[in-house]
Length: 387
Image (spheres, rainbow, N blue to C red):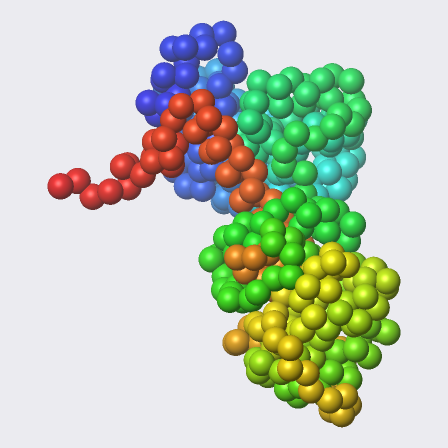
C-alpha cells in the first residue's frame, strides 16, 4: 500500500488503479487500497461471487470502483454477464503473457463481450500502438499497456503513440510489444534476435556449440531440412538441395567425423536454390571457394579429405545431434557462438519470448547508456542475502 500512498501523494488529481488481483478477503484488501488512495481496485474474475460482492460493497462505502480481471476464466462471456449482475464497475478482458506468447489475442474476446454487457470494458495483454486504436473501436473504454511502454527505449514517445492511436482509433507504428502469429512475422523476429535471446527464451536451453563458420559474423535462420548420412557419404546431402526451398536451412548429421560431405560445388548449387545456409555435424571442404561465393556453412570441421557418394542415409527424417533432436520443419537460428533449434510445435511461443528478451535487453542497454551500471539496472544487490 505504500506504493499507492506515494503515487497518490505525487499525483493528487489522477485515477490510481491498484492491481491487487484479489481472490479472497474481498472487503479487506479493497478497503486497504481505497484507504491508501486508490480509485480502482482489481479483483480476479475466478474468485467466488462472495469475494466480489464484498469488494463491491467496500467500493460503495469508500467511493471507489471495482474492476474484475477475467484472465483465465473458463467461460469469459458467461462470467462477464454474471459480473455485470454483481454490480461491478469495470470488466477487464485480459490475456496473460504466457497466453500472448502462444498467439492468444484479447481483441477477439473483447468484441464478443461488448455485445453481451453494457458496463465499461478494459482490455489488457499485448496492447501496442498498432492495436490500441482497434481496441477502442471495438468497445474498450480502458486500455491497459505494459511491455510496449516499459520495454521501450523512450517510454514517453511510446505512450504518446499509443494515446494517439486510441484517440484516432487507428493503427500507429508499434514501438515495442507486437507479438508474431504468421510465418512471415516469426521469421521477421528471428532476423532481429540472437541465439542467446532464443536460449534465454527456452529457459537457458542448450545450443549446439563448437562449429566453425565459413563467413565470420554470419547469421542464418529458417526451417530445417534434415539429412542423415554416413561419414564421408555426400550423396544424400547433395540430393537434399533438390528438396530445398528458398530460406531453407539444411541440417546434416554426418556422424561428427572429419570426412567432408559438402564442398564448394554443393554450396554453389544450394545458393542458386536460395538456401539460407548449411549446418553439418561432420565436415566440409573447399573453404576458400565457399567464402568467395559468400555462402554460410557451419561445420564441425573444414578439411580437404572427402568421401564417396554411396547413397546411404535419409532426407527429411528426425535426427539427433549431440543430444538435441531436430525434426524436419523445426526453426533454426545459427551464429558463431551457437546454433539453436526451435521445435515447430511451440515455435510461436519461443520466438515471441525471444523478442521479449531482446526488448528487455534493449531497455537495459538504454539505461546503461544513460549512466547506470548493469548491477544497478538489474537491482542485483536487492537479491543478495544480507551479511
